[in-house]
Structures are given as structure tokens and as C-alpha cells.
Image 1 (cartoon, rainbow, N blue to C red):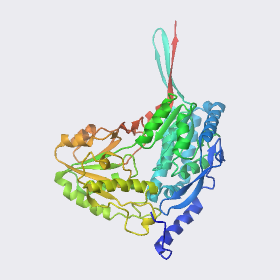
Image 2: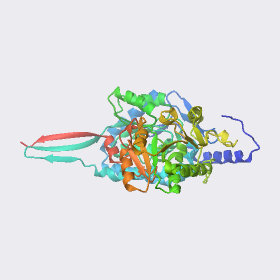
Image 3: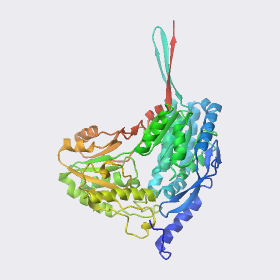
Image 4: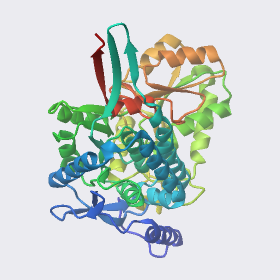
Length: 505
């Protein structure tokens, strides 16, 4: 992308000035590793840049952790666990989780602005993410004291089934929901009694570091450690570390497979929340405006950078023309621009690499004869061309086995398929390697329930999308992962089961 700007362009000047002023206020001063309750440089002194995808300007220089730093963090975590954290009661951990939630709430706007600068998502969505992060800590605070185990007795024996923490867990989070994903990992791990070594994505490390700074006086030293850096330099050593008893990873399926192989070297337990290529099924009985609203939200929320994004639309032929015309009108009316502005609907993608990846899929679809209903390129606006923007795109006419349909694009691209025969549609909807989520849009509860059961995915929305309240397990089938987030199931994933069988004779 061009790095040339027009110094006389008032709009570009306004955007850059707004972002610089915001960065001066919210970008944390301490961007080194957080190990054993202190911010510290990488062992070799290495750093990397994190940039603002709206302007492509540098936000901060961040410590580049490697194997030696991971070792330090794991040692610190075990020391904290053995020194004091393992002696904390469920009530103690509950109070700490509540304090973390309150602290996040008290810094909502600051954290939201920081997330928007580092990731590019609209500020309105960043605020939702921050509130969700606080909600995660509150949810796990609420259930931690209910984990009391089980007992069994008969004439000759007394049995106890109890759970114990693993001790030290390694947690790797993606760049699309940085703070929210940190909460999805840290809240259940701490609730279960573990210490954590957290590795944020190199594209978006700032909110995890700021969170560490905010909770420094709440959590004992070494209980939470943050090692920033690249996946192959910090993530790989973490997933292979013999003293890490549990690895939790959220990211692409391709990387998830490597994490699984690495963890297998030490028979380390894992949970994986991976990619998706989720179908949305629209029936003709539903109102057109309702269908347009839900489909638009399903694919374009967070600029399509959602693992559960509804990226394949299966629309009944009886309503297809009307709904698609409305979709095009809605997409063309979306405000693409500065994500710090309240009116912005679609911000930039996280990096130039992600822009290039998305455009490669779009170009492949064009070469295959895809019909572009709207979008299909970078925005024409010369100001937006300075940032990491891609137009929201609707494509019809692709074969379902095309790579743009089968693979996760992770961008604002929706492939459209018309259907009339239910069984044939379900067969095609399930014809992908993924099974994370799906959506059904209909006013007929019977066919909604039937379709939800027939879609091979772990989470199905009916007449809504992206709603993820704590308590409802989130996770996928097939190559979309192993395990569940957001629920009591998640607490189980961070604990080991111990059975005690006592003879009464």
C-alpha cells in the first residue's frame, strides 16, 4: 500500500492528529514483558513495532520475547503457584476476579480507545469488547465457589471426586478481539486456581500489557505473566514447554494443528478455539429488513475478522432477489472510515498482511467467475487507501468447492448461494472442514429448530448473531477446535480430576 500522503488534505490531517492525540493519552508507557509482577526487557533486548492500522504509524516499540523469556515466565508462574497462589481459597480467588472486573469497568473508555488504535475496530465495538471482558471475570467469580466436587458412599467405601488446578498454563490469544480473548483465557484459568503465561498476538499486544499494569496491585506477583513476541519465537516455546501443564490457544486452524503437535511432545492438555466458515440460512417467511440486518451484522461485525463470522449465505430463492438487493443497499450505505469516530461502521483490517490475504481470495474469486454484487477491492477514497481497508464484499456464483468458499478469509467477504431443496442445502452447508457456528433466520420455530440441529457446528444462533453471553458454551465441531469457552465447561478444562476411594471396612 502507498505510504505517500497529501499534506494538504484536511481529512487525512484530522485523522492522523486524532489518532496521535489519543495514542499520547492511552498507549501504555510500559511495553516490555510482564514477568513476576514486574515489567522487564526481553533477555536479548529485542523489540518489535506495533502499528495503528488506520494510519500505519507506529504506536509503540514492544519487547520481543523468545525462548529464554518464556522460561523465565514459566519459572515465575510456578514459583507464585507454590509460594502462595495454590493456598488461595475459592473465595479468595472470587474476590480477586471481582476486583479485576471492577478495574476493567473503571477504565472502559481508555481500554476501548487503546483497542481501536491497535486493532482498528470501530470504537463502538471496542466498548462492547471491554464490557464483555469485565463480564467474563464476573461470571467466573460467580461460579468458582460452586465447584465443590462429588461424593459417593455405600456399605464398604467412601468416594470423593475433587478437582485441582494444573498449576501453570500457557495461553495464546489472537489479534481480532485482544482484550476480550485475554479475559476468555485468564478468567477461567485464575478461577480454577492456575497461574498463567499469556502470549498476545504480535499485531495487538497493547491491551494485554495495559491489563497487566492495571491488575498489578490485585493479583500476586507471578500469577499472571505476559510475554509479547512472535508466534514462532514465543508461542512455540510456550506450547512445547515441559513445565506447562495446559495450553489454551485461539487462532487459525493451521496454527492450531501446530500447537496440538507441540503439546503432544509432553502429553500437555489442550483446548483449541479455531477457525470457522459459518453458514447463515435464510427462509422466505422472515421479514426482508430483519434478514438484511442480521446478515449484515453476521459478516461485517469487526470487519469480518471473527472466527464465527457468518461468511456463507444460503438464501431461499423465493426471497433471494429482494434480500440481496437490500443487502447491497445496506452495504453501500455503510460508513467506512476512522474507527475512532462514533459513526464509523467498518474500520480497517489489522495489518497490511491481512489486507493482502483478503484481496488474494477476492482476486481468486474474480478469476473463477464470481459475480460481485458489491465491493471487491480497496476503497476508492484516497484517504482510506493509506490505512488497511477493504471494501465490504458480496460474491455470488462461485462453486462451493472454491478456496474462497472453503477457506477462512477472515475479512468482510460474504459468499452467496441460493437454495430451494432443504436436504441439498444442508448437505452443502455442512460441506466444509469447519464447524464453529451457524445462523438460522426464520419466524417458523419448527424449521428453525430442525435447521439448527442439522447444521454441523457447535454454536447456532436463531434470529440473532454474535451474541455470546457467559454460561452458554462456545466452541466448534470438526476442525474448529477442541473444548468450550464461556461456561462451566471452561472451568473444567482448567482443572484435573482426582478420585479418592476410601475403604470403610
